[in-house]
Length: 291
Image (cartoon, rainbow, N blue to C red; front, side, top):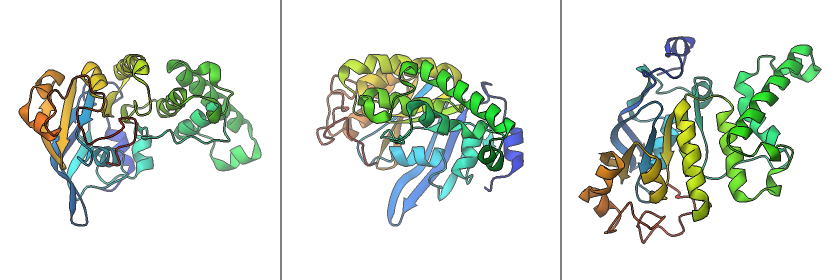
């Protein structure tokens, strides 16, 4: 469907129970490859919905559909009963859908604070010419963006590094900068693509606590290979395999599902100690899946 001003007008206010993100019969094909095959699931507000599956299962493709990077060949995505299918990424961002990437994607020559401010431009009201000419309204905008950005950095625990360049930070804090950049827009839906990639085992509990805190204010969807993290923070988990949804339910139900065990190539316990999810063919769990 095409985007128009009416779509934004009829969305329910953020935080309402109606902020359910629904995926209905979504199919995506790339040439002869079916990346998603009639996938149907929902993500509830103020909860963490996990998306797991072996490499190539379609997890990142699903996130790309949710944020508008990929348009499905059929099916529908809706938020609070309003269809979002076909809207451009910038329109979805203005409607409150934010997404992080598998990598950090930061601007190396901008400070941490400036990187986060770049994610809040949807709140700027002055426009290009007032900003270029340094008019008072532009100054007010910049002060407000700076305030919002510092608050986002504080929320993820790295406000003290606001004046540093990204390359001066270890990888873990850089991931938090990327997360703050998504948070600064005040999203109603937050999509996280492998937030634990590149992190050590010691860093996972703190990340899990942060994800749980952020879910209190948004509908959260997380793609991740680190099964110990997913089993601890998710309220519901969807399992994809070759583009098909093979399981969907509580972490305990998914962990006990024989179809999930089979999808992970005979792993004895998909929710057990292997941070890569028990898939012997997956490789380093800190690397992007290329999904």
